[in-house]
Length: 271
Length: 213
Ligand SMILES: [Zn+2]
Image (cartoon, chains in turn green, cyan):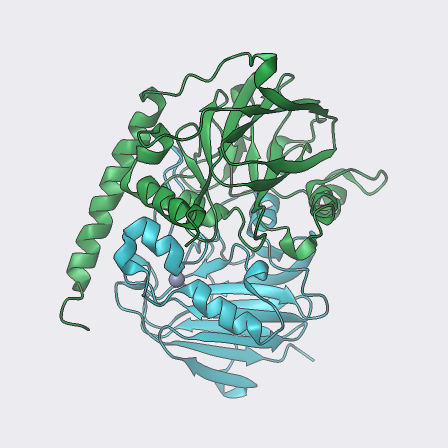
């Protein structure tokens, strides 16, 4: 152990100090000062607008500073999403880091999506649903056959993501774990999952601001834990949002989010 | 958690190897073979990934595994599901308890975010995975959410998720039966910034048995 290296006791003390800070920050996020994104976006701000039909996927690019809005008008049971750095697709959403770094599995407004490179790749600037799942989704043809029978072919997120990836020259190797918006997965004390259907209200929406140029894939298939409901159409809008300022809420929420943005800033500066 | 022990005799293992603290490891496990990972000194996180040996695009999926199981931890009876929805392996013994598969592996880059930029040059699991996977013609692209054997990460009803002190004791083990030919890649976790290794990384022991003939 080097002379200046912390002792195990010092490492432990720092870890629990960070945890206490993060718990305070997570508890205060819902009430914190917010970006006032327009409830209804003026048409002049909207670059792309589409409706993703039930079972389908959408893929495209979102430039840094633009936002993706997903509007769940009919309370569809989850929209799964993947994100890649548009300039180096080996960098992508990392669900493990996203939950671990922010000390919570309940990722919502005020939280970041983190890549495997320790960078903030997107900020959740609004989320009127309040639930995204990063732990348990995954619909595959095989899983749906086991659950609902093999008599009908059901569209599923794994196939959708392979298709979306293919349209950017990517393959199944690039289809990693996802985030599911509008997916109220809750756990009991023993760690059993429950689908909190009451939390899904028609008209809920999520705003995600890209913190670097991104390739996005969205899959409108019901979450595997949602209990066999049919998907409903989901509207997406890509809109010109204000870019993150230095005092931005998502940037300054905790020590960790500040450092994630510092890593993104260094990358964008060319380092 | 569902604790259970094994009756396999270490003298009959076809493979028995110590993996030093902080080191990577990988090996082919044939269908029907049984892999045992021993936490030789206790409280040591073992980051583990599985890839189909025949078609490595098919690999372990934490999210599919947990969604099909309907609960958050890996223990005896957990069926490890691939990204294509197929059964890759089954946990058949576990003397320790609930193992995490949600928090991913540590990396130099994530360490800078969690613990400060001064932690960048500390060895990390994803460094180990990149090196281990390079031996199987794979790269960083192929790293997905792994299992953290002997790592304790409760996911609480309020959503809180944090690594807490490991529960594994000296000599605790898990056993996994391969249901297809798999490449298993392991990082014996070097992390000292959180409690996953009791702030002191230690060696593990890996054994493999041929399945019942
Ligand atoms: Zn690690």
